[in-house]
Length: 172
Image (cartoon, rainbow, N blue to C red):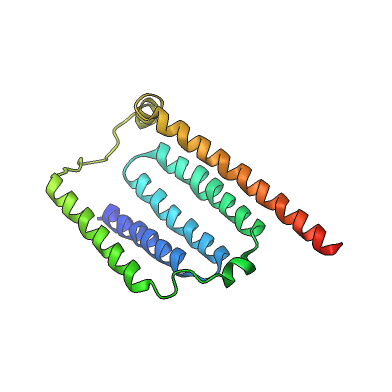
């Protein structure tokens, strides 16, 4: 009973945080709501008995990735970006495309007949199992994500330096 209640609380946090992430006008507030959503996902991992993924979610995503997003938000000139019109009149098309993708995902899941494990999705020794999967079956994807994060960090530093050069030229 308590696990079910906690699941609904964490799922609600995840969904509300995700919705508020994409509907806020302020990029900083969006990053804060993204943190709330990621904390909800971490709680679901804990309920599933995946302590390693819970800690990884907290440390890597809630801490590191959100901090990286905030770093980029602070470096990018958001005033100029806010003046550019994006998706102003395309909301009906976006909602239609999102609904179509959701219907396709639901149909795919219903057709596949996936059975979910009882008790906890991750048995004892889940840290070793995750490490074995990451370093064997998903090694290429794991390394590709590492390279992608490195490129994102280098790009944000480059954008920050470019912004400083532009500000110095404007001052002269």
